[in-house]
Length: 412
Image (cartoon, rainbow, N blue to C red; front, side, top):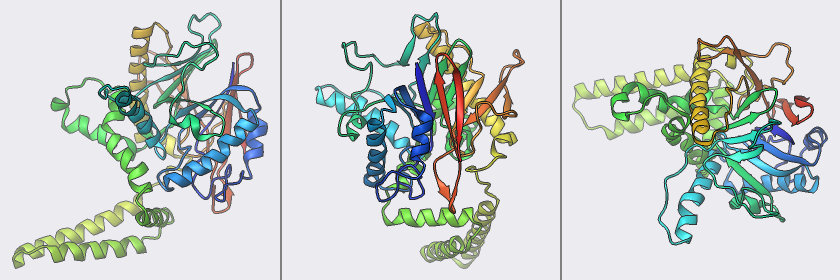
C-alpha cells in the first residue's frame, strides 16, 4: 500500500499555488506531482481543501475541479480520502445531509441522526485480519470491481468518476512500526473549540456527559464552525468586507474596525430611548465595549505561519484534551470492532501552514494525558499551498509505502 498526505490547498483563494484564479494549473503543481508520484492507493486531504469561508461555492468548486481533473489525468491516486477542516467544514455537513436526509427521503424513509464523527482507518499491519482502508460506522459495498465506499456527491466533480471517501475529524494509520493520528488541527485553536469548552464548564449538570469524546466535541462546536465556514463565505458583498477586516487585523491596521465600531455605537445609541441617567450608563457601556474589542483585536496572535503556536501552554492543554478525546474514540472503535488500534504517538496535522517534516531533528513534542506512560507525542505539520505577500508559505508532502514506511518532502 502507498499513499500521500497533504492539506490546506484552499481552492478558491486567489493566493492558491496549485490552481490559479483563472482556472489554470498553478505554479507549484509540478512539484506536487513529482513528489507525490503516481499509482498511489490514496491521496489523503487533511482539511481546508475547498475554501468556502472566503470564496463562493461556485468558484471553490470550479478551482477544485481543475485540480482533481489533473490528478486523475496524472494517475496520482486511485481514490481520495477527504478529512474536512474549518474552511471546508461544510463538506462534512453536506455529506451527512446527503446520507441522513436526502438519500433516506429518496428511498421513502425518514431522516436519521447525523454522524458528527466518523473515523477513517488504514490498517497496514502485516498480520492484521482487517488490513486495508476502513470507514468506521459505515457499511462497505461488497460488489466485485466496485470500491468499498464512495457514491456521494463529490464523486461527480470530475468528468469521469473519482472515488471520494469522507472521514471527520480523525484518521488513524496503523502499521507494524507505529500508529499515527491525522487530523486538520482547527480544534487546537480557541475559536473552533471554545463553545464546547465553555459549555462543559458552565452547563455541566445539564449536559449530562462524562468525558468529552470526539463526537461531543464536534457536535458542541458545530455552530461556530458553520458560521465561520459558510455563514461568512457565502454572505455575498458582506464576505468581502469581513475578509478586509480580517486582513486589516492581521496587519495591525485597526482604522477600518474603529470606524465600524463608531458607527455601531451611534446606531445603538439612536435606538435607545431611556432617561438621561440610563443614557449615560448605556453610552459608557458602548464606549467601554469598543475599547475592549479594539484592545482584544490588537492582542490577537496569528495561528497561521506561527512557529510559536504549538508551544503555547494553552495550545498544549487543548491538544491534550483533543488527544484524550481521540483515545476515547479509539477505545470505542476497538470495543465495537476488535480492530485493536493502539494509542498513536505521532500526529500529522495542518491548519497552521507551518511545515514540520517527518524526520525533523527537533520536532515539537507533547506529554501524553496519561501519567502512566512516559512516552511523548511527536507532532508533524503539512504546511500549506498559499502565497502571502508574494512569498510561498511552504508545504510538506507526507508519503507512505508498506516497505519504506513514512517520509516527507518539503516544497519551498
